[in-house]
Image 1 (cartoon, rainbow, N blue to C red):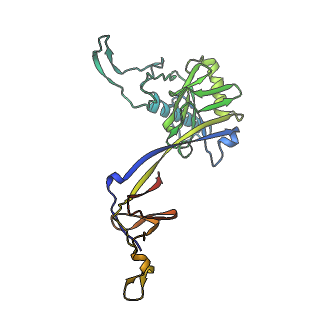
Image 2: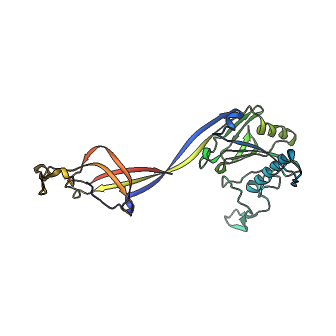
Image 3: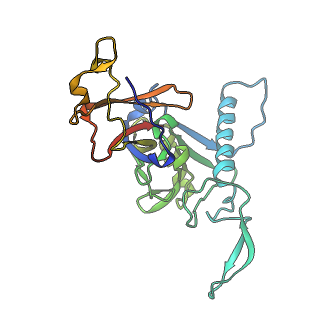
Length: 301
């Protein structure tokens, strides 16, 4: 049998729980496997005009043009001056006395910055400039890639993120990582173009590579505090305490020392539908002298 009690708002606590999981993939087969699907793409600044009579290489040119322009639009439109700094953006002046003058900071585009610090996002804009893009599926990185966890190793070197959205090789800035989108972009940064074109080709197409990172995923734990007051539920509703058909309790059930035991707690919604059941490890007696509190933890996404 059951006894019911309404939970109040203060009886429910929702807490976030941040989880991380590390991944490591070696070789092209591991990267592009059906259960991984990490994509690597070459982007190129070329003018592409579709021609219905063309097939083959023209399709590749179209894909390269799309990759270049999409990455530019999403992540670099405020940074295309060639210096890696903000361009065409109104900026305020911060004076030594603490006052602020000038225009309000108003970038034209979102660009998904990873930090409130001054971002550095170099993007090549000259004709035939190339970029490399690595795309990690969301079902692998969760909410975002854990900062300072990305590492990509090629025969010509390794690339890591600095925790602030910049991709570096050694101490040299070479691109950016968008943690919340699972996107890694090699733009060249401080490298010379002659050297960079060969390196970016290695990044995109070489099969002897290793990619590792940690995902970050948040689940929410809801804690329900079920409190039974010292004067509540001190009698049992179990039919086994009734003697015969006249409804008279057995003697032990009327004793001053008698205390019902709790074995199960059920949670109901406003429509009285049972939505969760919590089983105690062992039957627990209800105290007659103090409150009895049972905590139920439910994890949800």
